[in-house]
Length: 603
Image 1 (tube, rainbow, N blue to C red):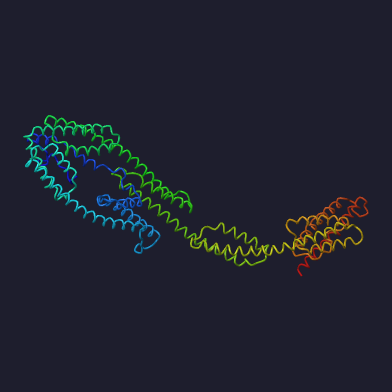
Image 2 (image 1 turned 30 degrees about the vertical axis):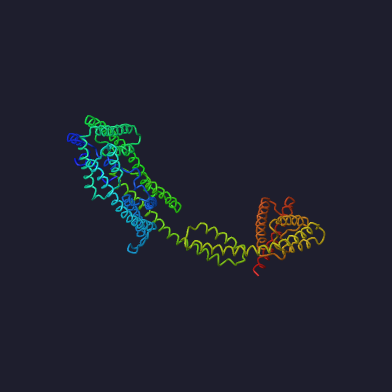
């Protein structure tokens, strides 16, 4: 196709047979609609603004890889500008975050990771455009020569026609060749096009002498017009309005270039029919815009909902933690992608909607950054707390005071769990130090404990032998001395394994039975080899026994005081006095034993 389409409204561009035809053709095109311009003005189905930066870069790369990449310069420029806008917005957002953290804006420096890819695509496309323009000039020059040859053929057709030439076939071939010839430079087109239609007019005037050819020409063009009209009628039922409008544009092009002239009685009739059908199809644009408006309103509602969700995420009502912000970051990223993926909104609110989105996105990032700035301060305090726990653990990790230090380390581990996060750069370091101190202590504890466990097994064997001896003792003379000897040997033996602790209970029960059999109090035994803890435990038991005996002595004294004759000669009080004497004697013995324990412990 040539760069511009011949316009039948211009006298020099019409294929005309006489003046009346010229006037008729000119008049019935006065109200012609510029369908091509109308359709180009329709909004895009997938506007660039809905694409993400990665999607835009992918589209640019697709264009760069096309063989005819140079013919897509307008689309490439639109995508390039959109990519630059994305990069600019993201850099501004980084700068905003940088200054929000209290940094000086003059020190800000940031290289967008996608900028180099965009730059590479633009540079490659420039090279392709240079090649395209060079090839285009060569093609235009070749097409110009070809069109000059076609004009010469047309000129010879009416100036040097040989006898027997089929004019109908010849002019059809010339018109087809002209229609199929490639583009020429715009600066050459006007004169070239005028020249072609001038000779076409001269040829038509020559045809006045050839009625047979005129009838063939009129019949052929009328058939074409009828085909165009039939196809236009089918477009009335085309469900896709955009497709119908696009094809209507093509039909008008065919009408102008290939379906003229026709016999005068059909000119106005066919044009009016085609024009009426075209108008009906054209009116369907209202459906397109109605659907578009409906979609845009739905998109606006969706984008407004996204903006409101961003507002809520940026201003949570409750006290929030790290997990909230981590989940919110993922949610916001999904909302951002959803916003960009959502189609266009009504033009009157498009800029404001985009501004509201960016402002609320920025507000979210500001709130998030503020949280983590405060979190950083608290993490420093947590770090100090954990360092103190590490110091305590390291100071005590070699201690063998198991009864004291084992609970201490368990408490240190529990406290560690309740201390919050520390700066990420220190987290592994402090944990490794704390774990090493704990592992050192518990390894030492296990090693020593394992060694002790072997001794405990021997202790159990020895205690079992003593228990067996105790069970054989009766109440014969010397039994008490044997019991004391067994008890002292028992006291000298250390701990037994945990699963064998029942032997202590069995021994104590057997001991009580033997003491009762020999009528002696456990506290009257002359015990040796008691540990400090055992002495303390024995002193505690004696104190409890003394308290009980003192209470019984007071009770017996009270009982005696109720008698008017409370002398020892009173037969009714004989047993009571005997009991009282025994209790007092036992009380004095216990007090002396307690005194001995206390004085020996002090020494």
